[in-house]
Length: 41
Image 1 (tube, rainbow, N blue to C red):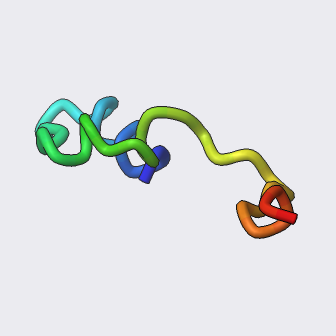
Image 2 (spheres, rainbow, N blue to C red):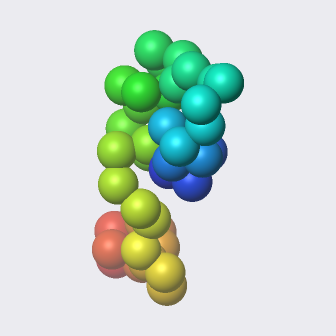
């Protein structure tokens, strides 16, 4: 979602939808190798 938001932000003809702008997953680039399940152990 982060990458999609960045592409839409750079576009001169597209607008970032409000839902995407506010979505938690669009706020920061995901970290490679990070798994939510491994942190729960």
